[in-house]
Image (cartoon, rainbow, N blue to C red; front, side):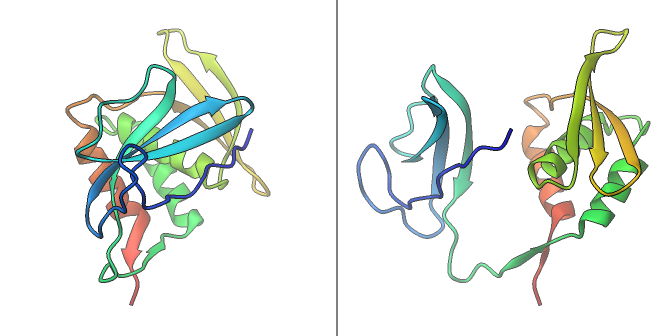
Length: 161
């Protein structure tokens, strides 16, 4: 199921002020009827996510000096996802990469199931290709989340020349 998520407004929902270039801010998604509502807050106004939040994240307002980044090709990322299969210590990264590829519609979710060890396993496929993958759902530990986010950003994007 796909959802339309509102774009970044560059305004703090709490204070109404315009967020400055390079300023950190928080975004929250809340279910509102059948839609998702996005609300952005300055770091100073952030009080934590509301109880009804589906998800939230921290980001930074882009600057004009920020060079445009281009996305790594889907085939390259699919290849990486396959290479990470069975690599010890990379389960969290593989799971995050798989979720990102689903979000970008490079992969589609076929089903989820419980493995014998109790873990959730995602069965994914690449539309138009004969590629089917199983990826264990291994959310990152809180102490590794920032490290994995930075590493995944390096893998997914390259500076435009």
